[in-house]
Length: 114
Image (cartoon, rainbow, N blue to C red; front, side, top):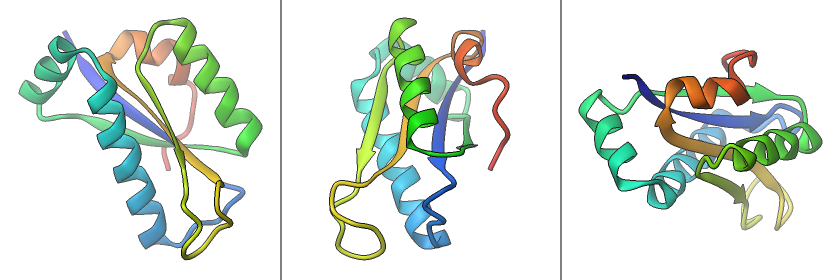
């Protein structure tokens, strides 16, 4: 069985590469901490596959968050402290899973990779 994690990143913020990398890392780690241990262990055994996808804006990001929650997927919504690039409280990205790939794909399967 395949397991993966998906991180969604807002494109409207036009984050610099370094800032983007840090926000994605925050989403990945926090989502793992919120995930079912069995899923995490299976995912780790497979090499911790993760995919970063793009969404247009906050509304789209929150829509995917709601869909993921409805399927019982672990989610992590990342809000920036606002010390560098964006205003305090700006929601930058969303981590989903790790969980079964087919379950996550029901939510994010049609998104484009960053």
